[in-house]
Length: 446
Image 1: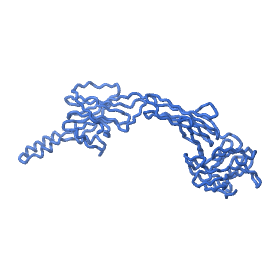
Image 2: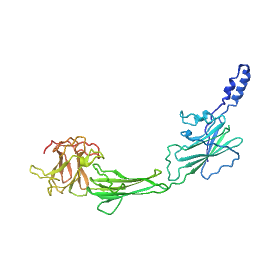
Image 3: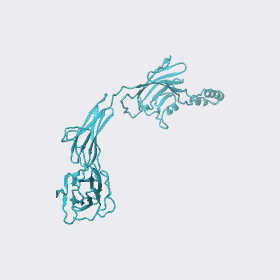
Image 4: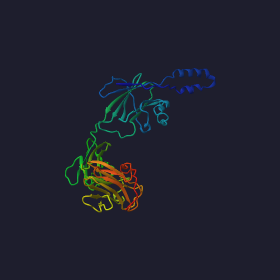
């Protein structure tokens, strides 16, 4: 049981002003009346609060029931947290945050009536109710019930709970007894789930391993628990590797999506379900796209500097090429495959090149088939060797159609990418959509 006694304040009857303005012939009589009134000017009767936990019992109090009137409640929204007894304009102003008190209702005549106002101090309380008031010869006793948020429930109201009742005025100390109860349980929040599979497989899982070019299908499941119905279910992408343009396509409805994997890294798909009370359940599935541990060199042409809303088929067309050294060296690309030099596949705007194991130095270049504006999506070259990324660089310059970006020389024995004519290492790529610093370009050739 907790007891709180809010501070009291002095309040003097306005009758003193009326008596002191008496006529001239009876000044001494009026002056005596003023002294009597001022002598009766005391502190406002104190207000105390006693909180009882569920199951606690208070001592039985015998008194006369006080008739209560509960009018429209909108007037009291926004009052200061606590338990207030309003018998004057000063009491009314103290019941509100500083300088925020609205006009006192015209229907509240504090010369004959008083207001009991109970305001919660937390959003965890969903209802306040003044249940009854008893009057004894020396006290007013007020019973208030606070209803707290039930287990598994949420309070969606932006306002604090309150209750206001009016009774005939009695200038006596007031003691509030506050009983706490919990509302009915809402049960557990909804549960969401998501599983994915390779589209050419039957096994579903929350963790998959795949390769660039694989297509993955993900499905959402959601179950309502408790007394609220489901109102929203969302399947979406949460994380993508840098340079990826993968997106879920919902050809079988909003709860099943398919995407094509385009770069190495981790993809994360999320599922979320919400019920009528705003409670949410969340889940996620991950797809790891890892390069194989091989002494073959893997070269990827990916993209940076684009927005998620951009479509890859709008990116400039480019041609990733690798050549043998020397003026008569052969050049391998998707357009001109050279067995033993490189194996190349393209998927949309992305190119995947495999260079057989060996010890050679091979110039790498990118030919622009379309013009590329300086601030548009730009190509990046990622190199992987023995399961690790060993090189990366991006081009951020304006390029004319048929212009060549000389990426550098690839050491196939280590997977290192050596910039042409540069002593510094290649510039690193940034996350998808972010600007990147280019490596120093070599003069354009054909």
